[in-house]
Image 1 (cartoon, rainbow, N blue to C red):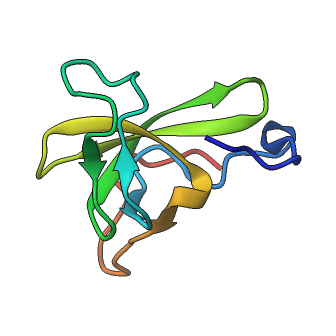
Image 2: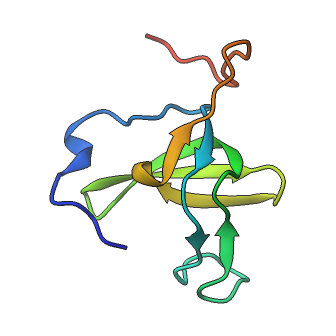
Length: 98
């Protein structure tokens, strides 16, 4: 995983808990996903999931734990690997205080 020179955690996360997101690229097991071989495809482009937690990686980037309901996997993704997949008629699963 190659990170940009930008320290992303100097700004707020771009996604919130409960956001519906779509994967933009193949996400493979880097060896941190238990029970699957390294290189196993965990998510495909277009897969839809929901942000269930937000953590950090190397004190530089946010890692978004995404629950992919179809595969029943929770996978860590970088923000650049995701895009919002919100439906204007759907309210967020978890309301955020402003």
